Length: 138
Image (cartoon, rainbow, N blue to C red):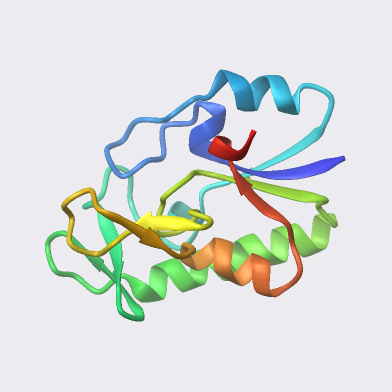
């Protein structure tokens, strides 16, 4: 089984704060699988660390007010190509992320409130038929 995985879950320091969210349950789940790691935000051209961003209407806006929609969409396209080229069976992304969240994301107010929805990359992959789950689904 081939799995496309958020790099931050694998322990790579690529999150907006410059850290990671290494997840032992994820690593255990992946032990017997072929792993392809990605951070769509970094692939889209955003630095680490970077301002936190959330989806506001149809745009991705950083806490500083910068529109980073282009970078998020570019990263999503790269994630889709990687998934398609490698014929992945599953996508395991970081929960609640504006890029990778699946089913629940932050509401765009930077207050920690969550709403139903998908991150930019997760949404694109779902629309192309990929099964996307988060570490919370394991």
